[in-house]
Image 1: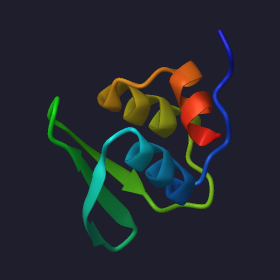
Image 2: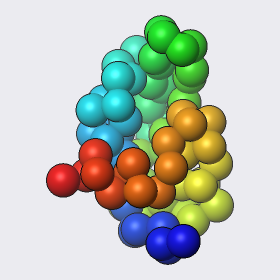
Image 3: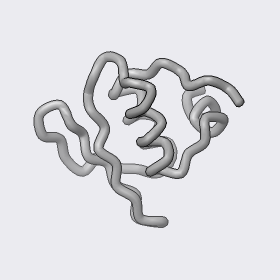
Image 4: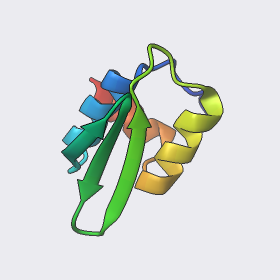
Length: 74
């Protein structure tokens, strides 16, 4: 199992957009993304570095593995 990479909120938003999510709105430092099929919503904090637990929870919500995350980053 590979370890989680260090990502900023903006980098994660770019990865999620490649995975089919669209940005719906932003309020303060929180960006709401939505995917219609299958339906999923994720709220990504716009921080310079996301905590490991936050990143892991967002990946679990979006049903994206760490390997898929690495593939989408490139």
